[in-house]
Length: 295
Image (cartoon, rainbow, N blue to C red; front, side):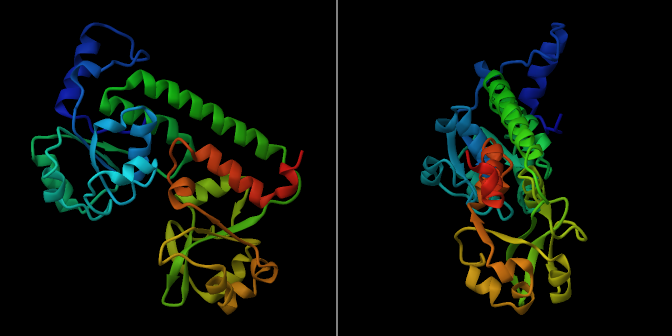
């Protein structure tokens, strides 16, 4: 299970369940003690809360909370890694649910010390942990049984795309995920990143396996990676366009550059590692291997 920083209230609820001798496999339902005003920090956390049917309890979100569309109408408390503690507290929440990695540290420490219930949801860059992430959010908001149903559905969807990928014949496409340009260099996703996890789930091979996380690549590293496809997030001022990408001599010299193989996908959909991850991987698989998707 993912690590979950339980609030005092939820910790007491769990202690009560244990005292009654109930099996841990039967999750406790905290709905009788639901928070009425939730601040959700992190696009995937927000998406899960809405998927559980609890979106009406959210009173504020961060700038990465773009799905579903209703979330964008909520008051905004800033970027997930640049949250204003004062902005969060001004919403008078009784529960704060944040993705792991939310920051800055000083703001998070203020929120934890405020006396409000604060739950941190671990978000490792691994597709296999998505169901437990859903369960953790469900426990945080008191919708444990709905979360279990959703988690099992997502598990089935993930297995379905994994099975489909296994039937795809031919060599794997080498995919370079380019986040942006930094001083004329491609900021690419290496291993231990959500982009790497999704490329592999979709049946591709990460062209950049020599680095971890997001790193700028030298021209020599780009050419050595020899990607068949360039993958980027759609929209946003810092995101690469095909024209910008293939104007770089290093990218133009790759198989992707020669074939003008350039794919775009919505950032949260592709990288959020939330309830829609299997669908996103299926879409990416269809774009990478169009022949495999034909009837």
